[in-house]
Length: 353
Image (cartoon, rainbow, N blue to C red; front, side, top):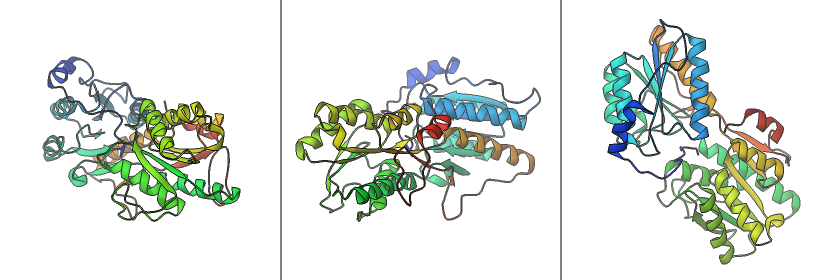
């Protein structure tokens, strides 16, 4: 999730003392095998170095740095929300004379002063997956169009329910109560794709359509998905379509449905494209999911810094958008007429995690 948003992938919990300890561990950069001895330095700063989404980003950055003859230095917070480690990472990259860096911000607002310092030093700064606040604090953002990712699974679900002649009773399993961008965009995109008026497109939960049973929050986690699904089933046992913010939440929702004996009668849709999620598409746990491409985000970002180092050219946003759209692909083994999709075999070849 995710990102994210774009996706927030875990609870926030900055720890200054832990960040200090990171100087010799996760937050200390080094040559990660990208490029030759004389290459320019490019940085990658992720939220953590354990989440599969960010592991795949690092893989993409390493591949692109090697291809471009750059030295990659990678950094990460000890946990999601560890802003201080990311601040230190930027300081390290400034000291090493890096040409630029990619960052998935742990705190979209608090990191901005450090980004400003780096830009004043002439570095190109690109946000990956999660925008800064304000978004124009960086030179560019490379990310999933989360609204489109939600819309794809909404369109698929609409086509399936229309074909089956079924009236939808929908449970919406969102992230949390904070109305963060990735959560809102995925939720509203799904509703749009399904043909449900959304009211304020920047707010979750104000729609009036009777097909929506209700919303609950999951924290993007399996346990949260199970609890949220249990809550909404108590409200209306006739639920037959479940939207989830991400695939861990979908797995939890399925557990609750199976325990209630309703797993065969309910369709689940989700977003992420992680390998466990694709496996669940193949198993029929998830009907369809929208795949993100973290490796592509990072590799395109490194290529953009290489171009900037050569001629000063900065990346341009995708036409009609304020960020570089790195794509979303619908994955399903139940194709629907008029909805372009790839199957789980393709998904398995291109998934992350």
